Length: 111
Length: 118
Image (tube, rainbow over all chains, first blue to last red; front, side):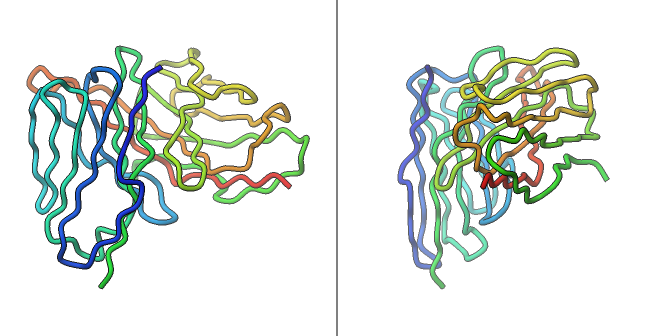
């Protein structure tokens, strides 16, 4: 079945440093979604990318969808302590509307 | 105040007992989902429902059952057949939106139920 791999599993950065997490799918995706889960919380939707090569920005966050629609990345510029949490990518498979989640990248920001 | 509610937040059960987790949404979403999350791992799909009175197995449906008698409600029963039921259970809902010809279907999650089977 479809797999979505996400790296790294953990990332510790000093406040102000940049952070990137990468997502790779074994199959072409209809779209890719990104979610953030704070410690002890539930996933919260960040963004959805649908077009090949699409790039979207939300303040310090930049999301990219690969040309082949099989990979994606999330880049955070100048991290802040409020960025702490686990970031998940999730690929949509076919018309059944099932999301396949990556294993997540747990970000720790040291003050 | 619209959203998804799950109750209770923490649930303890003895081994061998069935337990039902509730999930209610007032977002008028058609699709609802149940996921299981284990420590340090991503979300795995248990069951999903795209319309009332219809539901489909996800990747790890064994030992679980669901019903979808109302649009707003999608309860999950963890049966005694589930070999390792202790986990964080998350319910979500979504609706398809067309924006300039592209389909958007982000999922909205409830706060989750942490189930511990003793």
